[in-house]
Length: 529
Image (cartoon, rainbow, N blue to C red; front, side):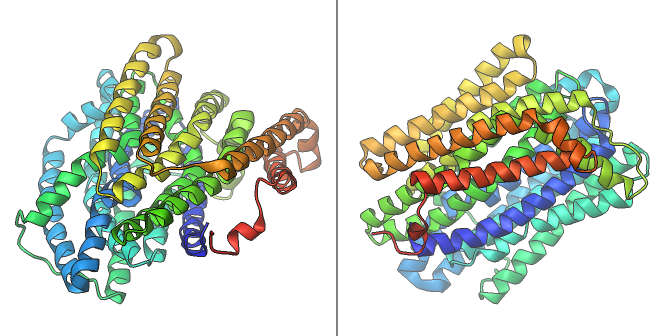
């Protein structure tokens, strides 16, 4: 892997890691205050948050960038900074026009959109009314995230990743502040405060990106919206890119609707989703953000060998990090959920006078089961973020879109078929299987086109990573059997013991990876040959 990729990845991953740690704090506090399965406020908030949060992920983590960055890079290479800036201003005008209309429509017809997100809430008038209210408060966040996505794409294309990677911190800071200010209020008031926290987080994130763009001389001017040839081209690329890059998020929206038929299921799935999002964000999303502009630049310059090399090295690094994370989720999903949402949450909330966590043992079991299933799909979620840019960099969004449509169809069909048998867990199973199918289709297409040539080095590294991960999983399995005894040695706090076991597992994996040759420090000190 080249030093340029590694340096950029370190910037994005570091900021993303900090953001996700704060996201854990946010999730722990919210689980402790508003609970999960037994509280309609929890289901209502997470269902309402799902739609604007999906757009945040699509714009900030893939779909919009998939169409915008290659075109922006092309304008910059062919016509210089001024032509690139003019193109970005055309996009800004179009986005503001479309999103203003959409936001107004949602404010007027919010119940219709709630039915699209969570049709199962219709049988519970209180839950449906709360979801409608929260949707109206939070939906303007979508417009703010779209503008954040535009400015992030510009800065990423310029090789400036810090502002766009650090902006999500604002959402978690605003949500944590809102939650703590109303920690002792009625749960309905806490839900309302959290909704306004989302709105405030969007404003702060946009301000951060505007400041970053102004420092690079790319603070865009407002224009009258016009359907220019460039904008038509962006929409032609963007619509398929939205579907292809956002297939996992679209699948989660579909899953949320199906799961809404079961009380508590939306909250359980959302909490599990937040946990596996940490390795997904730090590894897959960060790599995708760094890889797309780099691949685009090399493809535009005709350096296909360099593009293929960057893809292989990115896959190696992702495997080194994501496979052990998946193994850990499979082995210790329930202890992780208990440690975070009950152990840490109870101790943290006691500081603010809240005497117990609203997250029950049943919530732990259900969230843990969903997390274990999502863990099995974690490599697919990450590798989708790596293989998709290989198409997007060549302005091919239709091929990934076709595979995404297959994935969405498989997900919907499986979730509906399995829901009567497995309940909400059918949603997690369907999401994981659909993700693996989509990645498999992407890989075979790239291989047939000669754009992905794995080679002996990649296969060797994968085998060694799997062996090291298996050794770590065996250690975790043994250590968790000692959990009651270990908890007695750490102030009767089992959550402390769980974190110590997780840390020891990480150390075991690191040692095994070095011993088996799954990782070599020299790989990250030199430019790939």
